[in-house]
Length: 167
Image (cartoon, rainbow, N blue to C red):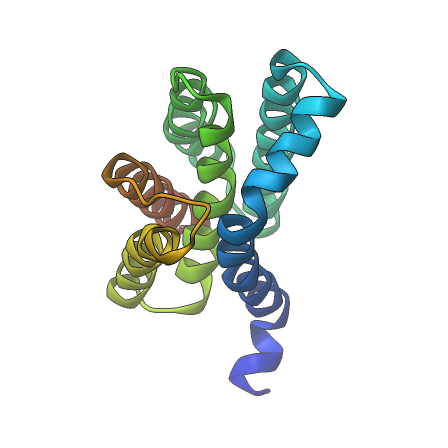
C-alpha cells in the first residue's frame, strides 16, 4: 500500500485547506460582507461556534476509531475545549474565530501526514504566509496579531492530532 493510499482522506483534507486558506484571504471580505447582510453578528458567532463543536465531535469520533479510551478522550477534551471553544470566544472580532477552524484543521491534518517537526513548520509557515499574502492584496492588510492566532491554532491542531493518535 502506498503512502498516498494510506493517508488519502487526510491528504485530501489537507490539500483542500491548503487551497482554502489563501482563497479565504483573497475573497474573505466580500464573503464576510455577504454574511453580515444575511445575519446579525451574533448569528455568525453562533454559526462559528457550532462549526467548532461539529469539528470537535468529529475529532472525538476519530479518537475512538484510533482506539483511544476514556483517558485519551479526557486528556484531549482538557486540551481542546479551552483552546478551540473558549479561547475563540474571547476574541473581540467575531470573524477572527474562523482562524481557529481553518488553521487548527490545517495543523491537525499536517500532523497526520508529516513527522512532528515538519508538521509544526508547515503550520507556522502557513500562519505567516497567509498574512504576508494579505499584505500584497489590495483589499486586505496583514496583521501580526493574526499570525499569532494562526500559529496558536495550527500548533493546537498539531498537538490535538498527536494526543488523539496515542494508544
